[in-house]
Length: 460
Image (cartoon, rainbow, N blue to C red; front, side, top):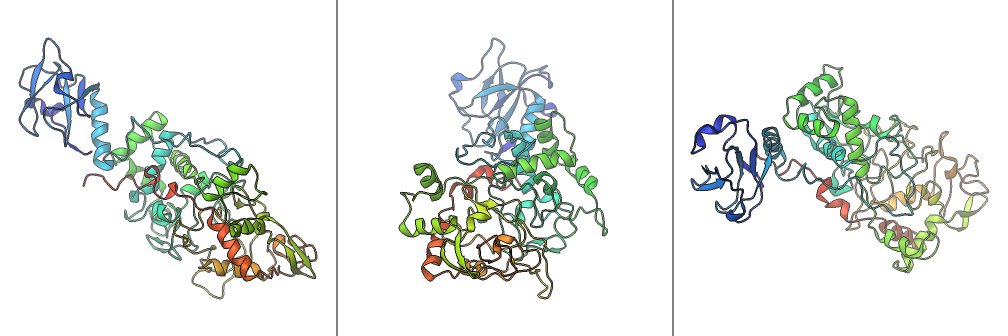
């Protein structure tokens, strides 16, 4: 629903077929259609003409009206508000249409979480519906880049589990140095550091670093770029931000700290727990039993994922693959003590080495609903198929900072010697492991409008 105009507001009092109606009086907002007989009536009623049709409607004396486009002249419902609220509705509707309704917020704060999921890095910034709504706007707003072309969502797309299918994401001054990480279930992890190299200690600290990066969004304060204070002044000039910050924080002051809290709330709200795995996990009550809704192949893959290998002379001769040691079920997040995984390349420089990447996204929604990967894997995007991912872990080439669980050794992962693991994965095991990983894909997160772009239906 889009606002056509404010018919009678302050300077539009000449539209009233009566005298002495104060422009600062209470107002009536026409919002939902009902019969004309149900509208407000009083002993001192007035006829006010709609600019949409010229036909009169009956309203209470001394009111100002906001009309919305698309209703029959004979059908209106009215409710009282004040002029500031009407102006706010108009400003918000110009930008978001009906994608954001501050009187009927989306549910971000009280989403159902399975009782078997225990990890949570929220700490002192609990999700609120208002906070996450502001975070959603910030996440999708290209005005947060110096040339109004890039938003957080430009590199983290809903249709790809909030990741990117590009090897390196495009910014205002080039492309990113690492592949953009999927953001699904960022809240449900013991790891609190963010970015591949964990240089941001919290999600809050991470949330504004891309904005202040010269390549990504350009408010770096260096290399000729404006700084974050310049961005805040820019945001002050956009009608919707003072409204939203006032709703969330009680006043319209925009600060980097408040931006960080809101963006982090929105990102933590992005969750996926409606997968085939979750259906099965709820049925059996633990991760070890076979899931009744799984195929034989999927159950075999689950057991391979969760069971440690049996090694002899550095070679796996039985048992599972030990994936669960670093990517523990049911969250499938990365263990917070992990080191690098043997992928040490650098995008754009085949001779460079980077040993600092110790984080990964959750393995949930690594695939989309069609069975394709949601973008390349690893920080350098070097692994583009599930076969390549399995190949990598099948034969690990060690380095001085590789995670000990990826060393071979007589005791399997964690053995601590200088050899990389040799899992000797069979063709059938590959099929089974892939089948299991695909059960971790959900559905709702790809299409739910509360995580979508709120600007797409805005007035032009």
